[in-house]
Amino acid sequence: MGGDHNAPYEIALPKAREMGIILICGGEITRSMPPGHLNAIFLSDVNALDTETPYQAIEAAIAQKAFVMWNHPGWRAQQPDTCRWWPEHEELYRKGWIHGVEVFNEKEWYPVVLDWCKEKNLSVIANSDIHDINAHYYDIVNQHRPMTLVFSRDRSEAGLREAMFDKRTLAYFDNKLAGREDLLKAVFEASLSLRHIYTNKDKKYRTFDVHNLSDISYVVEMEDGSSVTFPANATRQLRLPLEQTKLKLKVINLVHASDACLNTELVLP
Image (cartoon, rainbow, N blue to C red; front, side, top):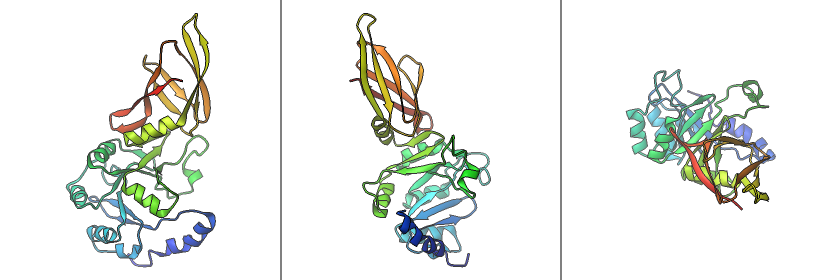
């Protein structure tokens, strides 16, 4: 407690504007479990969160129409036995004081959070929570840091805020996407371009180029149970029966529940 909690934002803002970065004002509400650690973003005054109790701080954030997320609900330092939805979080949820939950934090993945978010209509969040230089903590050649993908209608703070409150987010981590099934389906279908390149009528098969336009390598299970990877920013070929008109796929690394991944189908050209 104490000090000016708005100072970091105010210091960083001029440089962010110079670099074309949309800088969001936020603050952390750090307490023991429950309710644990929460972040509030889209704040106008972080100092208002400097209160005696976490509930006063959350109420002060809500008064500013902030977006409040629950951080690392399964963090071993606070909850070593299980990832649990506490009665205190239920009370906050019923008041409308929790808008999102981290399904992934730093290097920890909490699949049950997907079920919570689906049941309670909350935004799915992923954050690095990094306390180090990015390149020192993550293998940035072969990995990427976790992040939240926000599907905003425009590139503005107001657009980001509207999208997050509308639950148009996906968690991106370890070459996985997690969140709403409809968003997963839209991203996957927009990522792939199929092109028919050859027909062998004698052997009754057709060959297709499948080009993955995205930075995500999709791991899929075909209808026959075989596994295929569509590498990021690359093309691979598929040979399919002549009579096949649709490609039915289970996308293993696109998950929308603790026990469910995306099932979809693509119409063959």
